[in-house]
Image (cartoon, rainbow, N blue to C red):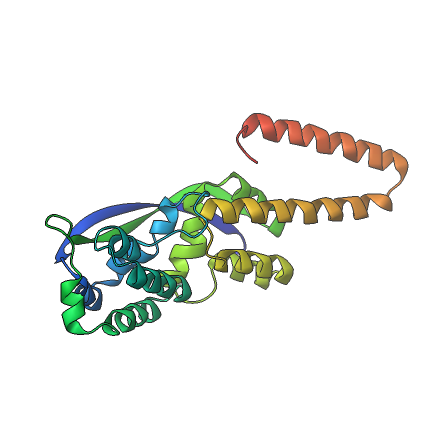
Length: 249
């Protein structure tokens, strides 16, 4: 990782697998045999497709059980399992299998999709997309994340921990630089389970309030002339940043 932190987005190449499920029993068998890249696509990558208007985004599995099989109770149980599994393939797979096995085999077979409504298992191959953004300190990392799109947040905070268990790399990087408060805030935001855009907006608002308090506290002890000049520089910097990135919140 080096001394700095390089931000990267991601592109997913989605491909179908030769596995379909026409009922809940076949869904159980499919989940049991699905490669990690398939579970990732259906139970994790959906967060990149969710919008800020979704209070609780739903995964592909529970969406299918609810909307196609029309088994709302099982769909709610599956959704809860996915949300509570965290970023761990083993935990997710075991939890989903346990949820489906609670139903008798006869019931699983009876709860089926109509013709043509089978669940098609897909897999996602990830291709990192560098952004040319490199942070040397916490402030630069936050500014880079403020300019970054959802794929950058997803790659570093959701996808990397899925394939490399542990805290997301940006959070580990911050802790290594004694920024535990900022790291804890990011970790809490990511664990909330909210849509990525909502996580991004809420955390950046919190960061900017913290940064403003820090700047105000630091300016109080400075001579008046320096405070005036610093204010002018801050305004000029803001104007430049808005011209470069007009869509930045």
